[in-house]
Image (cartoon, rainbow, N blue to C red; front, side, top):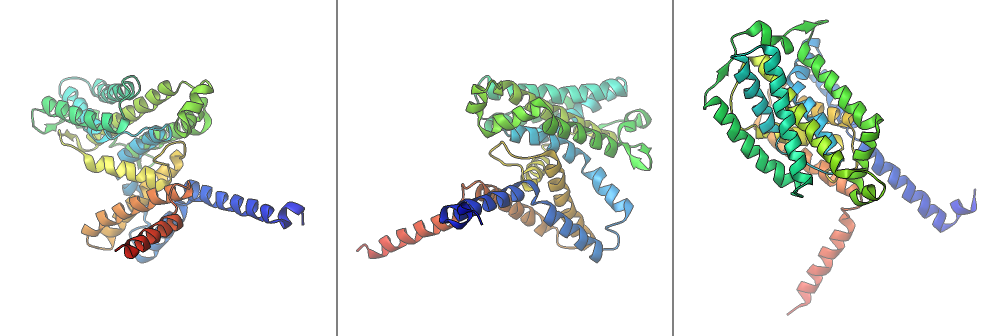
Length: 349
């Protein structure tokens, strides 16, 4: 046994390292345990759950959410937040449907994705150039974009009749798997590689971890954040176009549920709401974990009213765990402070 291990200071350092390793595991891979537990449980209690048809249906239903959440991970890692994705998703859907009624399907799809990209670029410029908090900027943008969508549709449901042309993006199959799933897998893979294996991805972590230190190190933080918002907008546009191709209709309606589901999936997956921590694969597991909960409620015929309560509780737990593993949440200290205040209050006349 070495001196450092035998000494109190050595034991303290070893304990600190162990706690640090445990915190890193919770942040980076903790979602795998509940995900696998839920998957195995549903496989045992529900015969239809583990069938190919059901699992592919889950992936198809979550294609849009996974694409948006993967790109949203970049935004959170870089220190921002995008609350406009639901509105951008709807805006891209009605834009592609509007042009799909009068022009080729290829042009309509490109314009739908381009519309999302343009909104994302504006989000990035507003938050960096004008220095407006990203939460407020993107929330305001969601109202603006929802209004633009309503103007495009005139309050009507847009129906695409050229099913064969526009539906090819999502409704056809390759190797018995719908193209919407293939498109989702390709988009998520590209975004994941961008974050994990490129210089731009390392700069995103630096910008979210400590923006001032990153600037001093030569990282162009504003450009990196603009890039993340632009990718987020383009991803929301792609997701909107995919779902339009699936159902061949589009309507101007606020989609706040999608925004909540995306953020919940990212945070539950382990990406820090404070920036600088996270990975796209974690977000994928987080989104699918939430999808399994919904699928389980359906297959087991449970009361769907409790599903929202479950999701809200999961989100609170995920944020609390993030704060706890970063040392921002100290229950012991908080309890001691509360007891001291209680004692002082009881002693006072």
